[in-house]
Structures are given as C-alpha cells and as structure tokens.
Length: 310
Image (cartoon, rainbow, N blue to C red; front, side, top):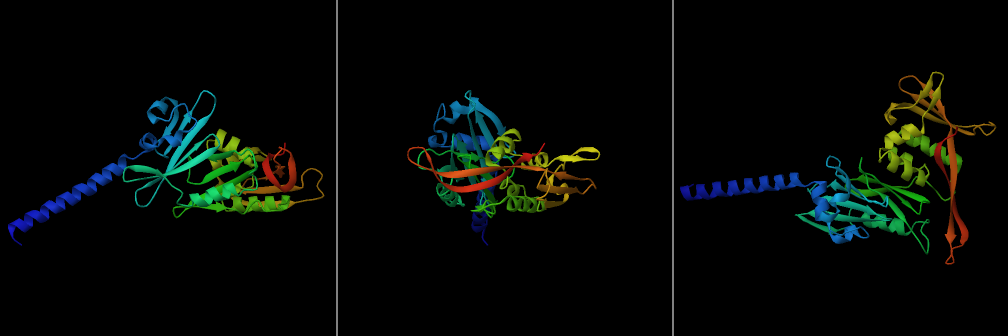
C-alpha cells in the first residue's frame, strides 16, 4: 500500500469513528425534556399554549430516569408524556391530555405522528369498544411512569390493558367476557396473582378505581396498589405482601352457603404467614345510549373487584 492510500484509509477510519461517536453522543443526549421541547403544536391541543417553552412553567414532574413528564394546571387538569426506547435508537412517544391521546415517533432528530407499533390496533379497539356511544366519549389514557404497559379506560365503563412486547402493544383480553360471572372474576384474578402479573390483575378491578387509586394516588405503581388492595389480617394483626412475588400461593374459595362472604381468597405468603382476603365486588352495566340520551338495551353487565369488605 502506497503512502497516499494509507493516508486516505486513515482519514476514512477517523471520519467513521467520529461519526459513530457523534451519533452515540447525540443518542445519549435524547431525554424526555428534549423530546417535550420538540413536540409539534398538535400535541398541546386545549392547553394554555401550544409552545413547549411557554408550557415549561407547568412542569410538575420531569423523571429523566423513567422517561416521563407531567404538566399540571390551576384547574386540576394535567398533561403527560413518556417514551419507549426502540432497538434502532428511535423513540416512541405517547402524550395524554383531556380525554385523548397521541403517539409520535422520534428518529434522525425529527418527530412525526405514528400509528405503528400496535397503535393503529389500539385506536381501532377503542373506537369499537362497547363502552363507546353515539354522543359523548372520554378516553382516559394513563401514560406509564413505571413499566412499559398502557392502561386506558373508556367512559369509565371499560378498561383496556396493553403490554409492550417485541416493540408492539399487545392487548390483554382475558377479562371481561360477554357474560362474566363472579366466579370467573375471582378465578381470573387469583390466576393473575399467582402469575405475579400486575397488568393481568388490573383487568379484574373496577376501571374507575384503578384510574383514581393505582394511576392517581399510587402514581402508576401497580404492585404497591395491588398489595394494598389485597391486604388483610391474621392472628397477629395487619398483613400484606410487599410485592407480588412475596405470595407463595393464592387460592379462591367459593362458599355459597356462607352468610358473610361467598367469595374469599386465601393468601399464603412465602414468610409463612397467611390470611383471607374478602373482596368487595361491584357490577358495571353498559347500556346502548340512544340519540336522546336515554339508555337503550343492556349490552353487558360486568362484575369487578373494588377493594375489600370491611
């Protein structure tokens, strides 16, 4: 190899290394605050401004580690965003505001709306939900601060849970069914507990209760919410698992002749303690909503867990 060829080869190598390093540095600099500043105006519909710079004063939470940001306003309303890391270095961004949600894709320094990664299927499932009506609809989309799964409710009557699997949102649809029963409810919930799957557990809990308690009070900490939900007492006093993995076994018991509780769950913990959880149940009825606002045909009646008795 002559000196000129050697020089050219070295220059190309340096340029390649510099380019790779620059891309790596640029990738490291991408964070939730930066993505917030790049969002288009339509991400901020119905907010005091559609300019991210003017909205910064409303930032209540900016969680760089979990890629989550929340705005809070004087009227108690809020706006949220988070992002998922994609294998190619791009970011999938979700925003939630006033009964609606949007998805955007960040790549090559630009952000654009997207319906990929299972978002189109999610949109279609929401639109086709039995809880949607002809006149007035409200989708409460909970942007995840912890974990990667999405939880949303439709008019407070139906919940949809989506797991993030292989860069696609996959809906959990074990519950409810067309004719759900109390026994089906408790059997399913216990199965989800034994699988230590918090997302599956949420399917069996009253949608408005999950929105207010789990996503609100517990700020999306699903395990903490569930452990508090199933807490109880044994002969020594108050007891609850610290995490779902502390549960050795949960067993559903149906005792139709019991005058106090027909449905109970025996919780056995790995530390040797055990106690009985007495679930409180509530049924949600979805009716056809007629153009005049009156209820039409009963479409579905679904029992849910809403805490514990007593």
